[in-house]
Image 1: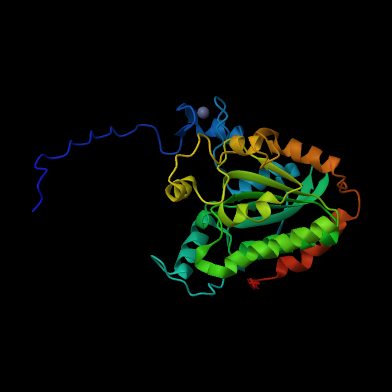
Image 2: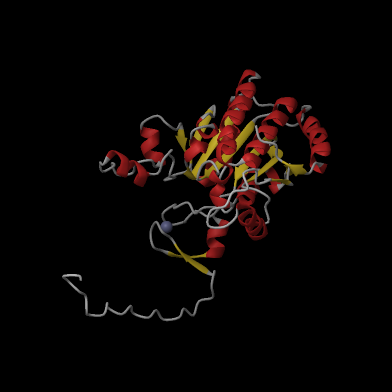
Amino acid sequence: MAWFKKDRKPIAQAKEKPSRVPEGLMVKCPGCAQILYHKDLATNQNVCPKCAHHFRIGAAERLRLLFDGSVWQEHDKDLVSTDPLLFVDTKPYAQRLETTIEATGLKDAIIVGSGALDGFETIVAAMEYGFIGGSMGVVVGEKITRGIERALEARCPVVIVCCSGGARMMEGALSLMQMAKICGALGRLDRARLPYISVLTNPTTGGVTASFAMLGDLNIAEPNALIGFAGPRVIEQTIRQKLPAGFQRSEFLLERGMVDLIVDRREMKGLIVSALRFMGAEASESDVAVALADLAAPVAEETGSAQPG
Ligand SMILES: [Zn+2]
């Protein structure tokens, strides 16, 4: 029998008045609590006009903001995971994949495309957080690697926009292998003297941080993005110490030399383009665009499953 027994009822929650504003018309900024029109936010690249809080955006929106005229050629669109471990947690992984594919309209947590960035032919890969937390499984690894190989062949730069909770545990060690695979491909890109720019957005964690996210010739972060390996809560519980304010945020990492720059989303494209120019990327008048178009043709028809390893 319990010594103390609660016999009073908990305080009843005040019932919220039903809102008269239609769902999705307005949004409250988590940065400054300002009520913003969705439409205004969208025209401002999903950055709060009052306090510059960066709202999370999807992979397609990211590519739309970067590529000239929002036009790009998508690569390896139909690659899907084969569920190599036949993994089951709260529900079977195969089923989770199926519902996520239906909800997002994507086959996995990344879109890889080629197109022009202010005239520079570039391969850009953008991760989709809405697809199982932007986690990196065999498909993400394979698509990025193929993207880098395409860049090697066409001799053009690579930009990867990271937004991920890390490696996809439902694919176990196979998803961890992607870290080495992508790093190997980036090594070849480096030896070919081609630029790679990594853009870190909120959040970039786990195996993604521990591999390609930190390997850019230039690592650019969006303001106040969570960037780290293990989450702050896990670290706090492990070392049993309170972490300093702003720990694992872009500004904290910039101060300690973990990232090179913090750039507002509205200036991101301009900065990437000037960096590419500085790094000596070739503009599309060269053979790069032609080479990429040639490469895109046979690959676009390819379907089937990603092979791990
Ligand atoms: Zn705000």
